[in-house]
Length: 287
Image 1: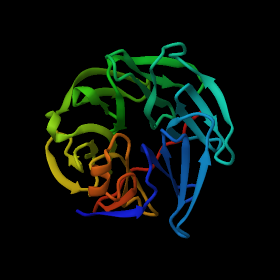
Image 2 (image 1 turned 30 degrees about the horizontal axis):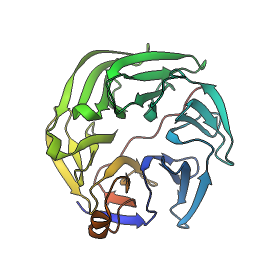
Image 3 (image 1 turned 135 degrees about the vertical axis):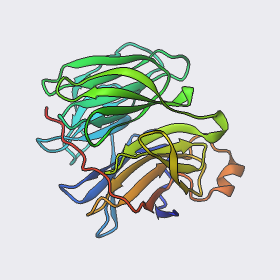
Image 4 (image 1 turned 120 degrees about the vertical axis):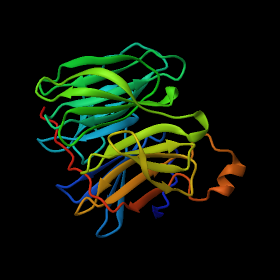
């Protein structure tokens, strides 16, 4: 599979792509630049929202707009301007940490984890429809990709600095996780497991930061497909398009030297892969 450059947006830390079927548009982030970006694939028009905080993950909201994880907790965003409506901040006062990746489950809860590159003091949180929060996992380094099997019995969750993706038993009725085990463990030179998504066949697509690739794994943890990218730091994949058959992939410039940037002129761009399989529709946050 080949990855094609869709937009040469040169994001410092491109992240969090999400397909909004309500609008037929793709949203994604540049976390370091505190930007939300929106692409209309029909017109190829891109709109940029310069936000007051670094937004790190987006989830679609049933009432319209989005639920967000940010550097300062959970917020709502109406999708129109640049104002964020504060919900809560479960790690307020913890210096050097922020939220990172997040997703909405199919019961309408928003899950998002924190990151702190200095130690394993981060956690995974669940934001419920009544806007209460619960800590669901702890002892995490950098929380990253999260996703669920099509039958809602398994949850996948990346702990990046352990080069690991965990698998949990998932109870969709209760919103609980249990039985954590290692789904995927890779060596450092393979790349850092970053964002992930699950396709309609139950296979897991993972972006490998500093790994130059997105790889697809069966539910048994076996790699069965790989897409090479012309950039070292792909960050997150997400299915989109009218038939959910396109895999959009964000990437990053952050930390690359001048020489590396010369070798990777498309770094920070938004890419698209014709994956040959469909993704799953994004659920809506119920709050």
